[in-house]
Length: 215
Image (tube, rainbow, N blue to C red; front, side):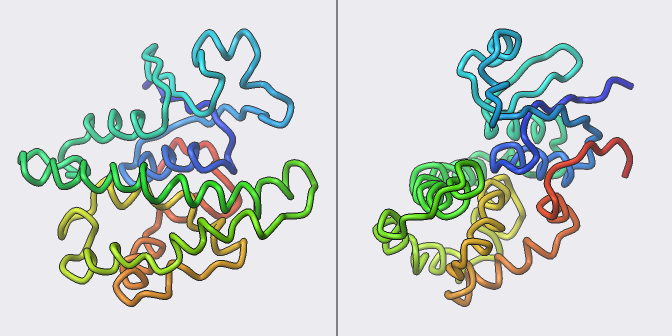
């Protein structure tokens, strides 16, 4: 059997996003660690596969694909029985609605917060400037819209787990590590969050992504 290869860095959010879906669907994979601190993602050999010079990308029996959300959609489409991408048109639209919300309204704010409070100190050894994160934290902090949505249903796109939920998870451990409790302040968000982090795949966030060839 040809094992899917995941080229990325085990501690990064986008690599973890892909690994989350792979683990959830029990897809064996090999992690090819890319050292972003050394700029390995900018080498000619890497750019031949990922011309934007970012991580991750996958090689699936010769098929190359990059951009973490596109990779997750591809993997989920290969395993339709899991229902991570709903097939019914209205359910599919609602799922896309919430994946769009994650991409446009959640991830950019969280990325700003984590870049300053977590990755900058870790990768550059510099002290976080908390004034930089005041505005994104103020916008994100109460997660009011999420609490309204999750007050009506179990998950973001309905009562079935979908990519809309899984796309949010890669940033969550870093928020907690940075001292933020925004995921547990609102009751419905907290219920949803606690259910997701109790799933077995959340182990991928403890110590980083690792090659997994058997379940």
